[in-house]
Amino acid sequence: MVGLIAHYEFKAGTNSVGKAIWLRDILYSARAFGVDTVVLVDTEMDFVANSPATYPTLWQALEEFQGCEHVYLNPEGGTPLKDFEHPADNVVYIVGSDYAVFNIPPGATSVHIESVTPTELYATTAVGIVLYDRIR
Image 1 (cartoon, rainbow, N blue to C red):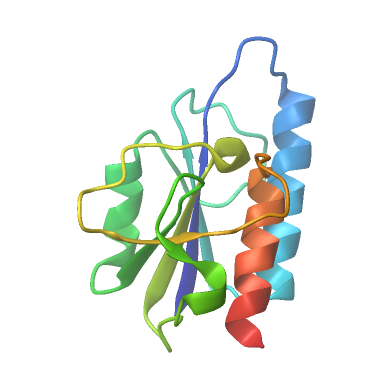
Image 2 (tube, rainbow, N blue to C red):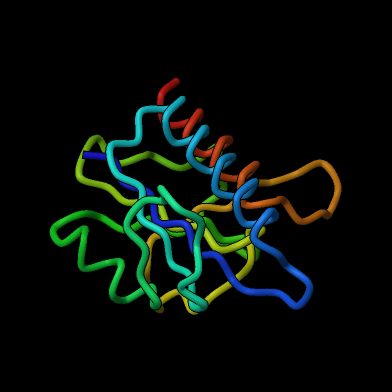
């Protein structure tokens, strides 16, 4: 089983159209690369209709994936993606909104996408890159 937790962080000025586009892009990447279950974290709890299971906190969302290895997408460190060995099964990938840093537990498995220039990646881009790397 391969899961994905996408953590949407509210930002001033964000509207439901922005959330809907972000959700669509996350779901497209998940489907394209074989994710079985997508769960969302939205502290505002106002996601659009037909969205996957949604929780107000990351810790509640993680309960959906008991017994799975947690892999955090970390823009500030972790194992470089080129050196990372993906778990074969029973894994959940966790990404923040627009590849933001959230409280990653000390010692947790995390992967970092190295880029040519120091730039931040959008969450939808980071998810697609990591999931593609998983299947190749």
